[in-house]
View 1 (cartoon, rainbow, N blue to C red):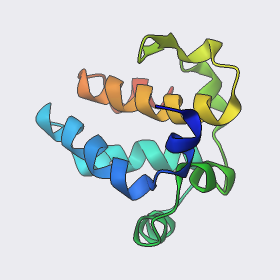
View 2: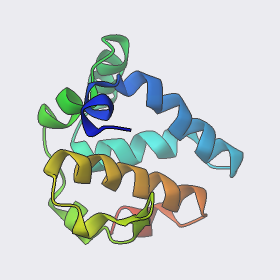
View 3: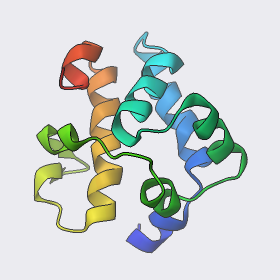
Length: 116
C-alpha cells in the first residue's frame, strides 16, 4: 500500500484491528489503550475524540501531545522492515505502534512493552 494511503487512513479503521489482535491472544483493549497513551501522550478522552472524528494517521501522530522519547528504544521487524531503519518519520511512528501491538499479542508484559 502506498504510504499516502496509510497516512490518510482513519485511525478509527485500524484501532479495532489492534484490539482484535490483542484479544485473540487474551490481552485487553485497556492494554492496547495504555500502549497508545504511552506512545503518544493522548488521554482517554482525547483518544475517544480522535476515534469519533475519524482522524487520519498523519494527524493522529502530528497532533500527539507528547511522543514518548523512549519510543526510540523500540527495535525489531514489522512487515519485513526493521522499525529502527525506517527513514520516513511518520511511517516509523506508525510502525512503532504496530510493533508494540505485536509485542502485546506475543505475550510480553506491559512493563517490557512500555520500556519501563
